[in-house]
Length: 159
Image 1 (cartoon, rainbow, N blue to C red):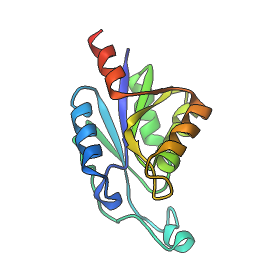
Image 2 (cartoon, one colour):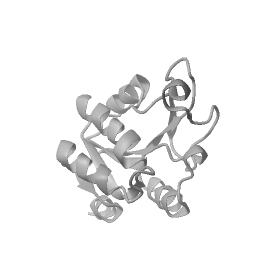
Image 3 (cartoon, rainbow, N blue to C red):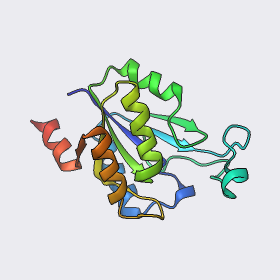
Image 4 (spheres, rainbow, N blue to C red):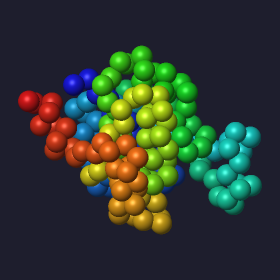
């Protein structure tokens, strides 16, 4: 199966746990991987005005990937979606930070673009509202149905 891994916002700004960084790093070494990094630009997304908080102005992905896309808000950019369409993949595996916000926003954009999003449930963590990610995983299953684990994907790579 032609697939790519999308790593959502695994960056210092959001203080990802080491187990997540290590897990994504090991998994991304086995599959084509792209990432989003969320940066602050108040002119594009007024985080400070609306929430009194904002992500860093400069940051980088904490795992090595084939391509990084900078975003200024919750969802992926049109450039990322175009890049994925050009890859002609059968599905996009999604992992990363804030399962019920940024990861879910990526799922909606990928779904709407016809890119078959599949959540890697053991490589995601929720926001401070739900660190377990359970809420986001349930929302993902409700909206997109497709979830998997690293082990299931790796079996498919060898099978």
